[in-house]
Length: 258
Ligand code: NAI
Image (cartoon, rainbow, N blue to C red; front, side):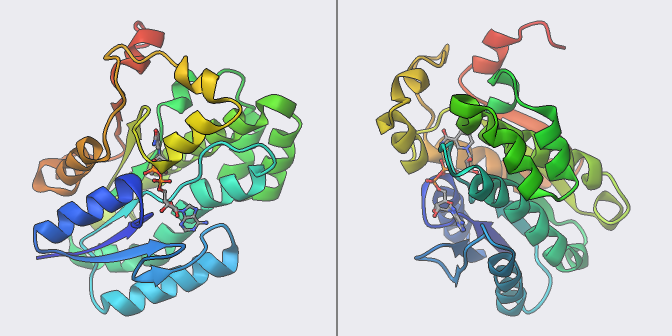
């Protein structure tokens, strides 16, 4: 049985993944703001350092995998916090625990992206670039200038940046070269507290009008099922892939982008 880190373990898809791992007999180190083995705030650098130290202490030895599900949905006025959680909450934590993942020999990492990366118009490229340079303050400044569009743009920018980071570093000597298989899952709308919050917000009607050809929202357990496959030996030959599971939205909006 393995030892896995799951961020965002207290709710939604992170909770569903943690449950499935525990049901299979694995040890899970859950990380979240509350109700977790490690309580930490991934929106601050100090919180991320504390989280990684606590995870390494709890694991003691090698880590067989990590699932980075902690995330914030779009919220105007919270651009800086959002990019810190959704981007640095993934990259800084993974950088800190990478040596323990390498020790396992064939560890698997699944990062939560989003299909908003391909469905959100006018995402400022400078904000994505700033994040990839590790400059969350600059990224948030650029995003805030978008006015009413800053919330969806921030969310998409954070998810574009995190997917690019996975694809850039994931193929390198420190990651794939150390036997770590790191990939991204990109869900469409999945019925979790995050989506419920979006639907109940002033922009809820826009969220409802988002086209989903299958005409229903995903469930946390459906997505957890895919994550389990991406943590299994089925993913031994899979690195840097972005797996879209979204009820058909991406195909509907970009049928010929292949
Ligand atoms: P959720 O809101 O149910 O769970 C997210 C968890 O992240 C919560 O337990 C929350 O406490 C934790 N979190 C938020 N900020 C944190 C912080 N500063 N420090 C530590 N933990 C923090 O959300 P859901 O829907 O399960 O989302 C999981 C991932 O999937 C997120 O990265 C989200 O962006 C992504 N996603 C969700 C979609 C959806 O429709 N629900 C669609 C596409 C992607």
